[in-house]
Length: 276
Image (cartoon, rainbow, N blue to C red; front, side):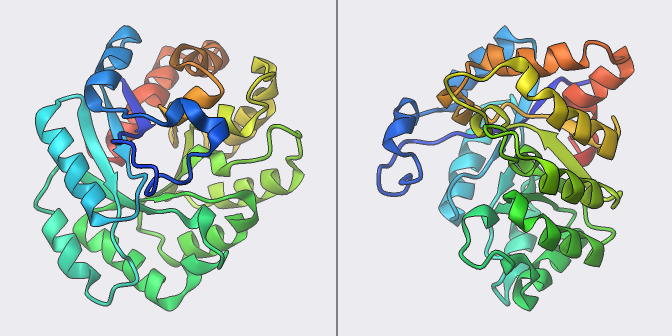
């Protein structure tokens, strides 16, 4: 069974395009490319990764497809298309010709309209994904979980995965609203969850491993061990932790689980979800 990091990013740094990288995230203001990550994956015993879009353009898809053509460790791409485009099916048909293109994502967490995902045009785009065999990564903050549940319930055969456990406020420990909403979302068996990006929602300088335990507990209890997957969110995780530190948090947590459950979390579930 492949050992897969189900969430990472590559970019050639552009200060205008990548304006989301603030001064306090200075460590990210450089290029992060597949060759850099190959060394990290090999060092930690991983076979490959799923690279996820960080720019909302089809140029991003072209960039990642070129990377994947050059590097075998890129097992899948989660790209971007304009789901609200009336002709989105033309684009999906085009991307279907690239087997490494597995699904799509929109940066819903940054939208002024918190319920954008429920607009008829957006839902029409989501409705086209299943026809072409594509997955959808849900990137949201906790205030959008209620809209996400409405979205996934409308498309029971579409495969969804929640990125970064929907970004609860680990830094303050305020989890009550998030917990109820993530449990409700998990009731839909077409929804998976990435245990990823957690260090960036904690105190970057002073987090402790035990800070994450109640959040991972909630996700594992809600989704079970067959609908969760590991993602480092490299290189974004570097603002708060090294790759080794991020991996150690989840490795220690899952060390009490069976070998089969660990293998599912560290690659098996990602392989089945993304058809690797």
